[in-house]
Length: 453
Image 1 (cartoon, rainbow, N blue to C red):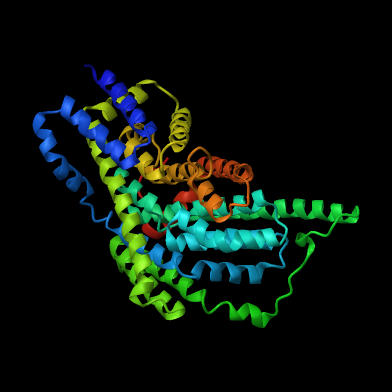
Image 2 (cartoon, rainbow, N blue to C red):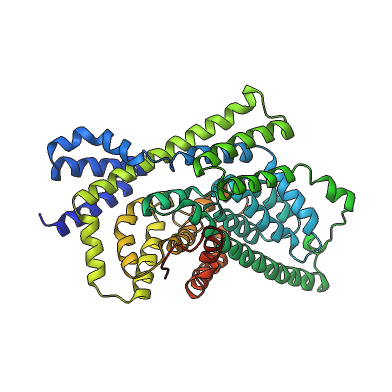
């Protein structure tokens, strides 16, 4: 069979396995092993475990379970609710301050936990009921939390970026820094929209009240004393210092990414023990179990995805596809558009982890040949994959919101996320027009990386 025919058969078998309902890791692994049996030397099956081990024997990947431990420690304490309460107290006088506080809380918590679902759950469990109680519409409240949670795979430490750094063979530290500027851009866009949407809902409630209807809670104002505001800070500041300390350790050259992840995990456990009294074995058991469960699931997906990519490379599917894309003679920006559209479509079915590891061997060579900076593209691709977290049919964050706020209809949750998907698309456009948003900070901290796009 020709390489093209094998490639089409490989893609078809992959889609068939995934649509069968098989877990993603097993689907990718089964397809890879099946094609090894039929199209590779017989001895290759004897080296499956060795190939998986060699593909995963990266010191960078060690950071993943350690960052998961850090996120589980923070996510299973009251840190998220305390963070949200403090931001709400200090921002309640700003029009739409409650919604904006939720955006900022999501951003800070995402930077500490590194997990989008954990951010949605931790901040949403406190933020959505409070916004509903204050008169925010269900779709608006759900959209803020669902979109804010997506910042978990953009702001460092990001597990998705760790995998991209491994797949693209790029500097993880530079990639983390490159995500900070776009992360702030998305926070600003989300907060700006929250303020505008609040004014619209406030005006509608005021018109209804003046027309003789009942008063909406959105028209009420909170009055908090300075003493009450200050009393909320002692539980929040240590976690902010933890985030700052981890970043200083990483970018100050004091620790490698894996050492930084270990440091963050240990300090997070120490903080929840000191602040919330979470130190007994019965208290730590759920944290360690969650870390083990999520790490095992994620590492299994990574291992099978790497085996899948290895088989694809051995059969020259990825090389031939990359050469075919280059041979199309697409202009630089049309090539980027086509690839990003492919990532969006894959986001309907696959999580970011699988998208990166499956597509990297195919899309990165043509992009590099076209002159794109792979660090910059990693950030753009991450934002595009964030869209997959809040659009159906997968929309992981949508289902997290549905679980913590079952009273909000799924249709309202989906419609509430649409404006934020549009804002993400706007952020991608701005990054294309002004790549310095992403590249300036890593160039300042780590020096120029060489020719860029």
